[in-house]
Length: 418
Ligand SMILES: Cc1cc2nc3c(=O)[nH]c(=O)nc-3n(C[C@H](O)[C@H](O)[C@H](O)COP(=O)(O)OP(=O)(O)OC[C@H]3O[C@@H](n4cnc5c(N)ncnc54)[C@H](O)[C@@H]3O)c2cc1C
View: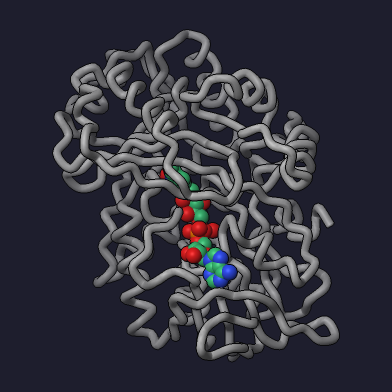
């Protein structure tokens, strides 16, 4: 069994630690943040989404991005700036956003999502790991005929991939979720989708890993690598431990992975897609299901007695500042779909922000780069990192054990842009 160092203590790092310890490896997790942290894996919308089989790089996204670029409250925004990495990323995104790419990507994303959903059901059955998994499905709520037609086409494609999807009118939608008043034309219902409380999941995983003997290095930044003849020997850190040696290394640093991997010449193009969420502790109404406001590109998730609203994709570099104009865009959309809610409900609610790690083709980076025999890259999950966390951890563990991955990883290869 191997000594494994995992760089990054987000959902990908913790799920990898979970399955790697189960397989008998000795695991160290390094994170530059303290044990109490609130990064991307905490305040997200908590959705497990087999319905999301279309990658971010899809036809129409470039035109939408250009249209929304001029609206500061829009849900998708690329901050124009003269940055060679951003320009190269945008070019690759444009090249990837084709029907052929979506066609190739969809079955893999489906298989990853369904396997991850099964893994979440197994995790939820563990006696001391309660993270509020709700298996009631997801509603794509539409206000306009255009959006509903679009979603109906998505539902047809979903069914052809074996993912159940129902097209509902407003009355049928209200019957499914009678606890919330909706002002919509109709919806598409994906019964296999689920939701959970990400903060509880992260805390629960951390507790279990602690008990399993995982070694934590908090407040410890990985600053470089010590490599020799096709192997990583150690990571360099700013911590008191200095260099940390191991047999195997996993790069799971989320949006920072490109920078962390710089010394390894890995070529992992990535942009941080900033999103925000606001959680109402005592919402006026509490839906039973999670939903997406389709035109506004917002995710709404009941978590216990609270209700979380998340949205926006802001490509604006690796900064974690809160942009109040974009937060206002989220808040203003709420009463348009849920008319009982008021903009004033959000007064005093502190916005959370997180940086989604976005590759230019919308697919995660998962696999062993050719340059190093003992390194696995696991990052770039964009809007699906929570959903795909467990299957990612399982696949990384298969690679660590020298097995062939149970799901083909060709489209996710970390060298695909090298
Ligand atoms: C508003 C919003 C809603 C979302 N909703 C959903 C959803 O409903 N479903 C879903 O599946 N996904 C969702 N996501 C996406 C999901 O949250 C991310 O894909 C996921 O959290 C990424 O996890 P990660 O482990 O790759 O990265 P992170 O959680 O960012 O973890 C990376 C870790 O690496 C550490 N690190 C960075 N640099 C270093 C260094 N040099 N040394 C040591 N450590 C370092 C960081 O401190 C961090 O803890 C949402 C995201 C947002 C913003």
